[in-house]
Length: 142
Image 1: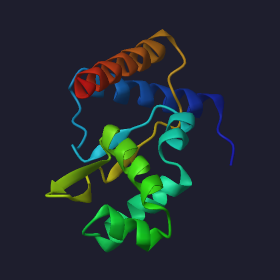
Image 2 (image 1 turned 135 degrees about the horizontal axis):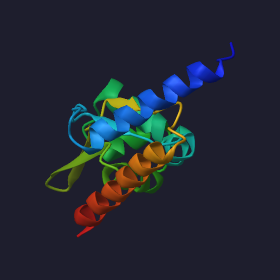
Image 3 (image 1 turned 180 degrees about the vertical axis):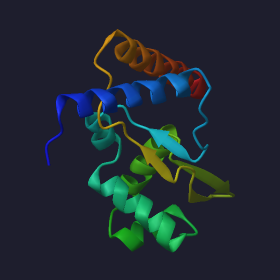
Image 4 (image 1 turned 45 degrees about the vertical axis):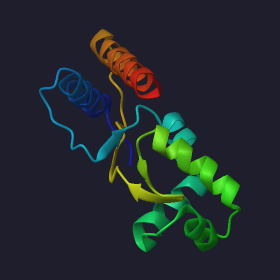
């Protein structure tokens, strides 16, 4: 299925409006969602192994990182590394119960604009969102 230039422009404008609404807080995105601005970002964060962990957390609700590692047949160290990464991305939460770490999902919805605005407004909205995400990450790391 191919789209006409007019349809692509309409989709691009809708995506730009969505991004501007998110940035300007005129559109509420559910707290349990994460926004990716490109496929590249999506696939960098959600690798096949990390998606496998997310599925196992959702489906099995493991009571520890060690139980999760056993369930997905991976080394505990590798699973812990991916869990810490997913926690930094705010996709999961690692609840500490004594010496045990229990992974829980924080995000359940993925938003990915398929067509990004090409004009100045679209690029400005994207740049502002990237800047705000960077500021949130800096605060979270501090």
